[in-house]
Length: 439
Image 1 (spheres, rainbow, N blue to C red):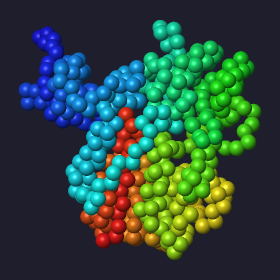
Image 2: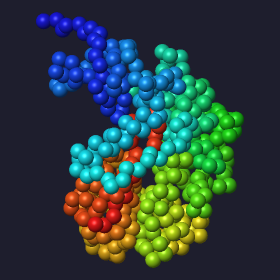
Image 3: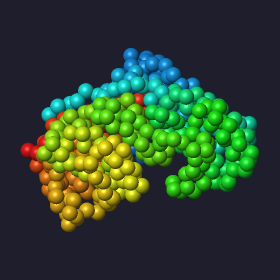
């Protein structure tokens, strides 16, 4: 029997997901329409059928939401880097705040005493860390440089990026032309971007060694654009500086409120949005309210983004991180900033059992900034640390909600406050922060 041809349909969108898909109910089955907003009447075409729902392409907006705007980027809709450029920034934050509320209620069965106002900052040219994919495509006559497409594993054919920090966002075509001129253009799969206060670094991942002409072209590009150029032929420990020949200072960013400068390597994790990071660190330090008698633990500390500012206020700070290289750089940052009351150590935070001396020492305050998987192993063992106050910075509302439920229902904490951090405007990423105090 031949499959019935799908025809355009019209429906009203009842609600929307946090990643920019509208939800309509037709014939008793939910349809997720990419790009549709709650309250809109739209025409759509079903593209994929699932057991409990269908996925559809938006064909036309018949009755638009007042929260709909024109996307700034020409590649929006194809590029997977952004999913919410068609939504006003204020409504984007409303969507993310509701996502956090829903997760805390549904997964954690908790509600904060206070909902925090969103932390906001620039919504364009904010992104100082990114990984751009690269693919030489003879059929297009050019080398593509950009983010992956939204609905396919291909690289978006784009010419600029509106969220990347200047000047990198306007260099997409120049990078395409540069890589297209190299002998190894088919063996260069990605570029890591790191924008510091003092310089910009591009790390080119190379699967084959560049020849002398390739190196000369890369150096010339770095000189013309005022960029540091690095090559990465293997793992992270193979990253080497190509241009300039030497640098006088490391990449760094400053947290002026705390008179702290944080040096980092071009492949290190740093918070993507520098303006928001400053607001976030300020809030975390104020919320922890550590004084000269307090011992603070900063778990998942990275290169010291929170540890070093906290050390300006607290008696002692211990930062703990699983990556040896990050811990070494954090300790070096402490020394450069003249901070003798902060130490760092390497530990697998998923494997602590309470026998460790640093765990047995406990703490008065705790800062948690885990990866998307959250801090379940810490939350379930919180009695080992017994802090009076906890600030939890999260990049996944589901795991924050899970851990909040553990802290509130099992470990004797109150959820004093929670709210979103607008770290990634125009994307579906929901960054949030929560404050817990001992009951």
